[in-house]
Length: 622
Image (cartoon, rainbow, N blue to C red):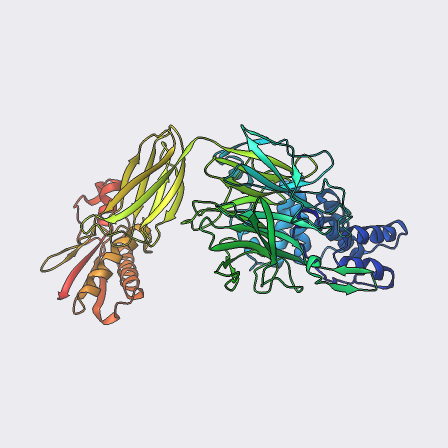
């Protein structure tokens, strides 16, 4: 299969159209993933004027599964034209096909239909939260310069390059002219290698000891260069399903391990969690060699294909595969994981918001969500199999933006990693879960992260620019520091937060003034932060009883202001009770405009009015 990309057809009959005698042969091909043969049969029905909505849907899905998005878009449109009330996934796939053509406005209309039909889907939620995300992606800070390598061969599909620490690049290509794949019509893929020196590659040669007449796919090389994990076909282990009706032996994708001895790859072994029931492929090995990442459609995933990881133990034993969850995976396709030396996970997804087709994303070690790499790494076409050699500071990725799958350089634009640690200013202890934001020189928030259990997080910044870092956390006053200009590399910054100290007198708990909006009684964000301090005081003093006095400004009638202040007092009381404080320990009363903080009568300024719209906290009992 092209790219050894795990693809499952959705076998869904819909709204009056279904399999019938005319489609039996085509359906058999489709169900066995032989999409090229299926397309030929379905298109013969179109030529014979026997095509209904089902045939158009099957044709569209077949083209979608072999990455011919122009044809997929054409036939999804025809399927919808025959029957507008389609299964939700039709609208999603049609939207993806339209994105690959750069037709974002039309794609959004289809995503609206998808979201309406499947509102709980993660992809639907992401769309509804930010339907017009493309301009934001297009304006995203450029992280890499891109340049096509000379590894490609005209007419061939070349992809999945990984550069090891011994200046050897391994990649996948079907240039060898082997047997034809009945799924895609392409010749089978093999693993190739070339030497990388002075920015260029030597003439690629096949890695004969791991290649077979079957499909081979992307590889992972250990940091010492002595171990290879690679994707292969289950046929090499004589494991397959024999479909006599279609005269095909249906295999699945498996993972294999090889060891280098005397310059040759040997001791090839299939991994124990391979199965004829599902596919596993696209391996990537952690720097310490203890965790293997891969893609699979095994049971327990979130969508079509997911990213998983497994512990690599001694003596060719492994732990149980673990799904990476919804930080990475969606109901769509995720594939081609690569775990970098610094713990950043790169992967490709069609389920997260992107430019179209597959986009490359990264999930940094302490990040709360995955980030799209933006252009020029990503395009309207399929962009995938991103790898990065930190020692040489060079990335490689694959894309079909020129027509065929080709391998590109991704050269980092000068930047620096800003590591930030947040600590308690009095004790020096690190603060986990603190919110840290980085702002540009115009004070625009670029990104916000939560600190890890070690109190740290990190941001990627451009060289030669000054930034501001702000940190905040419950029970602490916020603090900011300046991140000075740098020429690259990695910087360490410490932010100290002072614990909030509330003044408690004999008669009052004194907080910062809690302000209300004009003519409103709801608790504002500022008010909530202050009331949280009161909640803490009352939790620390379990016998304390508080009486809330609420006041208004002088605008409006006495009667109106009295009623409004009563509402504000009750809002304040209810907020504190909602945080777990017993209703017996807090009561409140409105005093209208009868006790102004600033006695300015009818000549109050906006600021004076704001100060009069306040609450006070009287200690009834300590």
